[in-house]
Length: 270
Ligand code: MG
Ligand code: MG
Image (cartoon, rainbow, N blue to C red; front, side):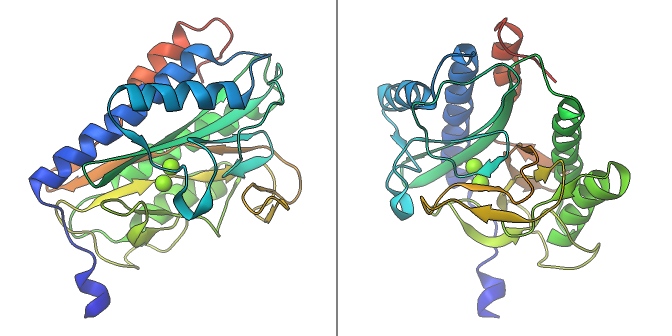
């Protein structure tokens, strides 16, 4: 009972704060998207993102959380998530997962996107496309009465059964609110009809992490960076959504990010 009661919908004023924050995260990722190219470094993007977030009167949500040192998680190529921005310039052919969070008015915002610097290596375009499709298939399952396993199944089925990629098991989506990670966990795998039930006005982050090769991961000695064990490339897309009776309402916005990508001649839109 205690566990069950922790999974509850948000009040509208709370949803408004979360929406505002997720929009700022999306705008930050759109700014990043306008500036990514071969030769720029993750540290430069991180500085740009932090300055932008603070200029809007908000605060980076990841910096200092659990001890993470930066505003953005920047995870290129075989890195899955939680990469620490560094001074290594990006190169042609890189794919770069960038995850951003903010906190303001006591609530978080959270979203992620994977960018691609052409020319892409064989199979990478499909990896990105399938991961993004899986995100939206998962979002379609985010309705009151459905369970977390319905979301996980939709994502896993598309990535593994239909497209022969692998979803990461150890890292999952999550409830979002006054904490970055709230119940319930939203795994990117599962069985239909299993797991905690979704309720109206619950806010969750859905974030498939998909490997081109095998599902196993390992961690770098920095204690943060997660990478694929087999060295294959990995993609990551994340939306925060609110569960509504008519279906999920997006709180984050990938359209403005994709607008930036279209206007950036050094990026490919997949
Ligand atoms: Mg995130
Ligand atoms: Mg998240």
